[in-house]
Image (cartoon, rainbow, N blue to C red; front, side, top):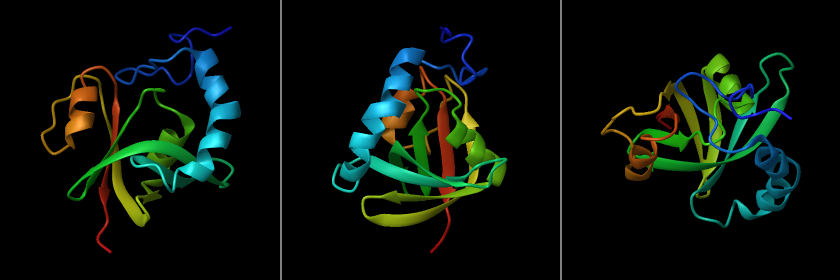
Length: 139
């Protein structure tokens, strides 16, 4: 069994904070149950991205926070495939609170980053985890 420190999602500045067995449980079972509820549950969003090598379309459930034209997502799972895909593409789409938004200029803020442009919750979480940040493109 892989430890958190040996897991591919564990990256410098973006540590994986949950054990791999819990991540596997979430991917295999919890996400399937949560997906239909994301439209009704506040804070949950679905980010749509393309695979780096396959070009396949993926949808991933995230907890997103918005402040003005900035969107932030805490990276409790570390630098996962959806993060790598969005960084490689330079863009993604996200459905949050019934709104479809286009994200541009994606970036990762390492643990401990202080950024007053972030929404309040990600500012607090950034003390312990990496944060995915992107700008919301004008409609």
